Structure formats: structure tokens, C-alpha cells
Length: 129
View 1 (cartoon, rainbow, N blue to C red):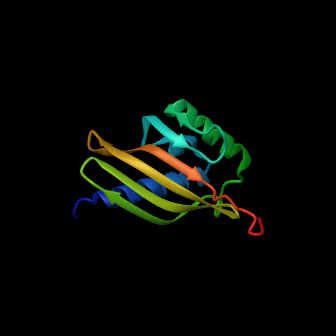
View 2 (view 1 turned 30 degrees about the vertical axis):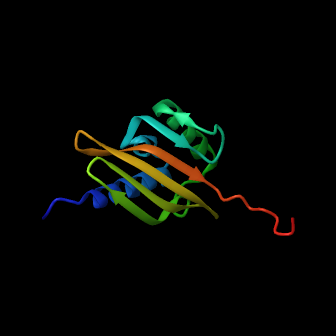
């Protein structure tokens, strides 16, 4: 069997991450993330840096999520990979809502690590204003 392409390796990384989030598996949610990760998350704080703050964002999410099927699904994932950096974007289906996901990755010691995550909800403006 030929070795997996970088795009396929990253796709598997993201799918495993989403499965871990659905299972409320903290170790799985943190796996394959750089120690110096920067996250722009939907809830405050506006920006979190480092693994400790990234963990806190998932503690908050897990406290308010039922977990299980349909609780956190990545759809329409597109990945663009170079030799040492990559990015991807997708829609996150979180329960009954949809958010945007953008990730930036870097290759470190031959393995892809998520170095940046951005989760955001679209701002809904009143059409009559």
C-alpha cells in the first residue's frame, strides 16, 4: 500500500479530532496540536495561546455539549498542503447550528500538527436595519 499523501494524513487528523470531540475525549481532542497553538474561538476569550488555554476551551465546550452523534461534525473539508505548512477550512455542524472552521498546520519532525484553529459563527444582521 502506498504511503498516505499529506492531504490524506491531514484529513484523517481532522476526522480523528472531530470523533474525539464527539466522544468528549480530551486527550484525543488535544492530540496532534502544537504546544504553542493559537485559537480564535467562538466564545471568549478572543484569542487563546498554548496547550493549557486550548484545553480550557474544550473543558468549556464539553461542559455544555451532550456529545455523541450529531454533536460535532466537520463537513466540506478542503485541505491545501505544501511541504511544511498546510491549511484547511470547513463547516462545523455543532448540534443544531453551523460554524466556520479554519486550521493552519505545520509539519514538525515529519508529522502534521495543528498550530492555529479558528472557530466562528456568522453574525446575523437584521435585514430591515
